[in-house]
Image (cartoon, rainbow, N blue to C red):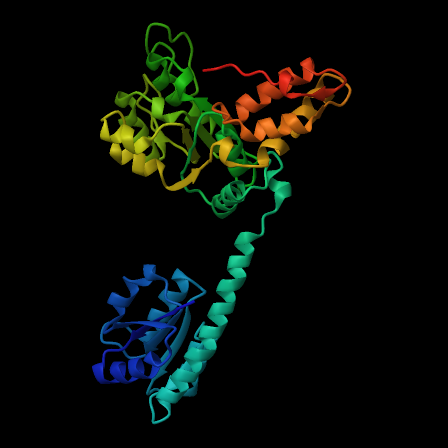
Length: 390
C-alpha cells in the first residue's frame, strides 16, 4: 500500500531536500504545498502523513495541525520548526502531533526515520480496517439469506453505510430483495427505534402521490375531508423507503428534490413549513441513467438519490444461494401450515440450479410453496416444480 505524504513548507529548498530524502522510498506518494490554505483545501485526498512547517506565511503550524486532526484523527502529523522552546514542543505533542523535528543538521534523518515508522503504523491500520470490512456479523442480517460472493458484497456495502445518514439507492430486478436491504439499513442504524415508512410509488395513483407523500390540510381540495399526515412527516426521526422510485411522475420530482435538499415539507393547503429529520432509501428495477436520457427522470434528482448505490444481482447469478433460499422457504411454509417436513430431491435441486428464475426470489418462493403442496411422500421432484411464464 502506498503511503500518501503531504509536505507543507514555504521554503522551496527545504521542501526539495525533504522530498528527495523520501523519494528513495518507492512506497511514498508525495504532494507539496507552500501555504496552509492550499494544503487544507486538499485534505479530501486523505494523506496518511503530513510534514508541517510550524511557521507558515498564512497560518501557524499548531493551528493548521488542529484543523487537520479535526478533519481526520488518522492523519499523522510531523511538525518541523526552528522553535526549540520546551513549552511549544510539549504543546504540539500534547495536542496531537505524532512527531516534532528541529530544523538542524539532523532534520532530514529524523524526518526519514519518522516517516518510515509512521508509514508502517499507517499500513497496519489500513490492513486492520480492511479486515474489519470483510468481517460480516450475519446475526444482523439474518433475513438476507445467501453465502455467494455477490450477496457478501451487498452485506459489506450495507455494513459500510448503515450507521450514517446517506441517501441510498438500491437497484436490481423485481423480486431480488430490495426491501430486505432497506430494512437491514434501517434496523441496524441509529434510527432503528424510530419509524420505518414504506411507500410503493408504483401503487399510488398519480393524482394522490403528492398528498400521500407530503400530506394535506382539511379542505385543501374536494375530497380532503380531514387533515392527512404525509409519509415524510410520518418518517420524522426515522427512515422513509420509496420503492419503485422510477415510477414517480416527472411533475412531482421537482418537489421531491426540494424536500431532500431542504429536509422540510409543506402540506397541501398549508403555508406552514415543517423541518424534518429523515433518512431516504429509494429502490428501482429500472435503468435510471436510461430514464434520465429519455427525459422521464430528472438528472439532478437521480444524482441526489444516488448518494450510495447498492445493486442486487439477479437470483440466477447467485449459484447455491438458490438452494439455501429454496430450503428456507420450504421449512417456513411447512411450519406455518403445520405440514410434515418436505425435502427437495437431487433432481429437483439440479433443475433449480439450471433454471433462469426471471421472477427472482419472489418466483422461487411461489414455486417452492406450490411444490410443497404437490409433493408425494414429502419429497419434491422435478415434476412438482411448476412455473408460470411471463
